[in-house]
Length: 201
Image (cartoon, rainbow, N blue to C red):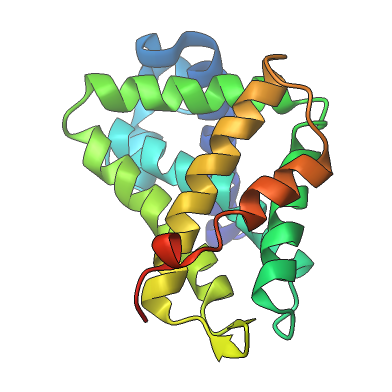
């Protein structure tokens, strides 16, 4: 194994261990236990991520990246705005049926709990989430709606509304608080495409 391969192997091992332990222990997650679970030392965490918070921020990026990759694959560039939003919403609803959906939600809530308790971590995690929301903004920007291309500003406003709506709906489905279909997700997402939400160009 080359040095670069060993570094990547250790990085992946630490991310996997952190995800497991953060989901289980929340704010009580200990760096020493994460390193032990990965078969490494805390020195490896500092070497690869700079700090425990650096590891947690990388964890968010690692967690959200494949999610947005899947969305980008599902929404071709030539698709109109309404259809793109519906496809995005349906994709979100299907994620609720993943056998690991409850474990994923537990992990997300644990990260939010960590952010609430650590004033240094909160803005770094928020920045990581915003970076992924920017991917959704880019995905929506320029799509046609009533013959007019959505501006980046309008796409950003819609992306914020969509993410907030779909995260809340998904949590309700996963926790058994709501029994709603893909059609419902698509309809509620589509209902956000209004002048009030989009704002001026």
